[in-house]
Image (cartoon, rainbow, N blue to C red; front, side, top):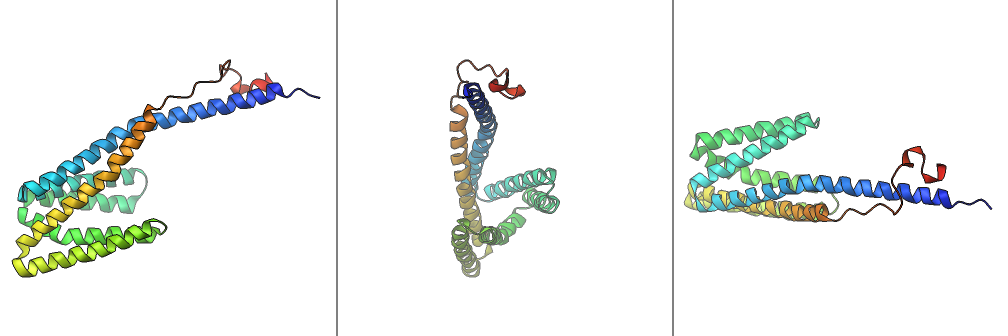
Amino acid sequence: MRDTGPVVNGTTARTARRTTTGTRSAQETARRAWPVRAGLGVLLVVLAVVAVVTGDLGARLLLGALGVLAALRGAVLLRAGAALPGGLAVAEGVAAAVVAVVSAAATAWVLLAGVPLALLAAAAVALARGGTTRRAGSALTVWAVLVTGLLAATAAVVGTDRAAGVATAVAALVTGLAAVPLLVGAAGLRAVAARPVPARPAGCAGCACAAGGCGSA
């Protein structure tokens, strides 16, 4: 009976080497990605807090920063070849940033109209994806309708200035909530980056892998 020991050993060595290489690649990706996600999450939390405690200035900072982030996201989409969504994101982001710089009154109106529209758009996207996100989309739709009704009632009863303040508070809340998955994801990626890389099997230097494995040597 033919001895298959070398072939089995060679297959095992190749599998172990591929596993080790894949683990290292995942760790390198996680090591680069987690600081970015963590930083973005912290930035969103800071923007949410500033928008709530500083009034008109906070609203302008919030709109301007979100506009810049949207423009950057659009640039990434353009580089990936998604011309239409990337171009729209860049245009909307730049417009929001310009409005925030130019006028506090215009910023208030943009938030007053934009918050309900943004919630409805996010709900539509979640509903279109189906699956587990459909429930989130349904909940978001209900929330968007309630927020729209609240803003309309506030504007009718106490004026648009007060309604714009409510819209800013809602936008700050949504921004803060958006930071949660980013921070959780960053923590998970940091844990992946900190895991020890599996050691190579004893006696394996990887010298025969390119030639078909130890069994072919």
